[in-house]
Length: 61
Image (cartoon, rainbow, N blue to C red):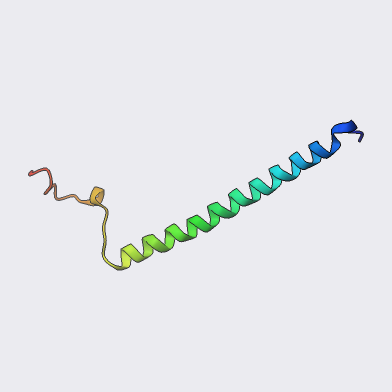
């Protein structure tokens, strides 16, 4: 495969693409685990979402 005089740029672009995709996947996995821990901590402390409230106390109904 002859990429001509721009071979270094092409290979660097492919390399940068792979690195960025790997970093995005890694960040997604890391942040997902962090969010799961935060939700588990909130659940353990008894915090509930306001949208889960079915008593309608805020609306006065």
